[in-house]
Length: 214
Image 1 (spheres, one colour):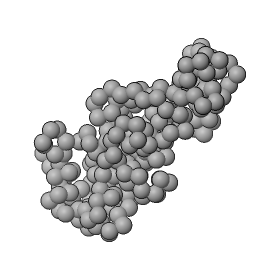
Image 2: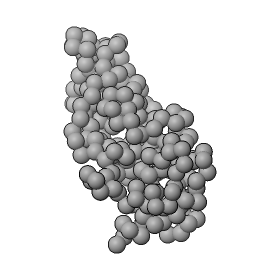
Image 3: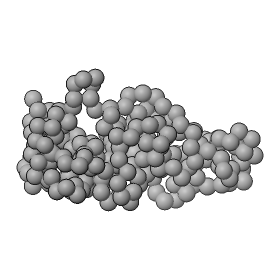
Image 4: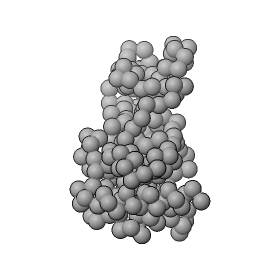
């Protein structure tokens, strides 16, 4: 389940997304020469507006992200989703591609601490963001409390939805939505389990919440 961003954070709208990937006359010559788009002049952007790019046909954009604590840069077309950037460009295949329509939650990751369905956001919209995937939860051999709880409660069967369930559970706990079984079910409702292991998932989230609060 996703929530409205705080008022002081920039909101990406359809207009800003289209603006970010639009082909404009100004600046396309330089971009075409290198194959990588250059940012438009900062002075032309209103305060708080999304960064605009002049992208030549067939050109790509360099996107800088902090992924699981490491600075990463990837050059890709503006139409590439964050999910595909993580899986296909950065090799982080723990994040799963399920429905690819934002319905199942298997692709859930944390972006600047908030849960996001990565199949529904373009990588260019997350320029400079801090992204955490399931690979970034453990500390060496020490599993995250949510991962340990999922194992203890056998909260998975086929495992296809498990990475997204775990990432959403981490956010659910951090958001403080674990006061009751009903509350956990409500705030985890954006993640589907086709094997119907919901009872064990809810038990794992409740158990992990107690561990995190210690």
